[in-house]
Image (cartoon, rainbow, N blue to C red; front, side):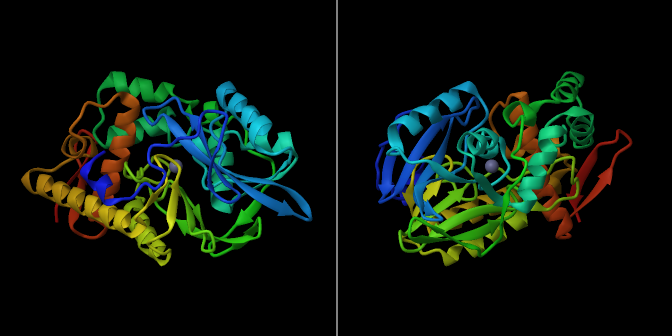
Length: 351
Ligand SMILES: [Zn+2]
């Protein structure tokens, strides 16, 4: 446990639901944990006891990636944990593969609707049928313009054209739209949607005041900082202030709320964690400014300042995206200026 985690409280201790089983968090709220084939090796999903149009059943929140292992784990959950009741709807917090991957299968399996923000629905449809953002020629050119110039890496990024679709081969053909401040009645409780920007196009966290629970999705995680990156689709994007402003707005959720994050363990200390994340990014901003004061820096140069550990190519592309998020924020705030060199690489220096 890192020192910052000691400032948070984990009321369930080290308890984890076994694969294919669930752990009860509150009456009618169950925690499901599935594997992921990344360094981040798991995702938390949630089962909420529900009743829709007079029919008793369950709402699922988030799905896991499309894989045989995840499908098998869901089948075990269905056999063991639903008390013989059906799944009535699938709510997806955002369009990333570990959250929406199996939505097509779950909604077909149970003949039910997926609920998601419209922006994330459309982004998922696009990403599932295109290469934008995660690989292909456009991503390779974008990475090269930010200083990732070694030919072997560039070739590998160009070749990685199937990254999203491999985990999200299909997106349900229809959806029900979630909007900020929507209140969804689930199992006799009101859950309010809180939009979050900067991590995904239009991420929805769900807060239930009567149960004292926040399904935070990826917006607030206890151990790691949420990925906030710039991709080739929107090269001048400024997602970091959007993310930090979204966190600030989440402070309307009471501090004693039990936070159910997509990765890591349920915790209390929401306001404390939000303060930690603001401080984390303030420190990164300061490091980037210091480096740019010494010499002009590309996104790839800043990587060495912000991440002081060896990264594989997959981690490198995400980390450069995060470096650019910090550089763009400082550039668009007028604190840095940028210049494209004769080598085609964009470098930032103090304005
Ligand atoms: Zn995500």
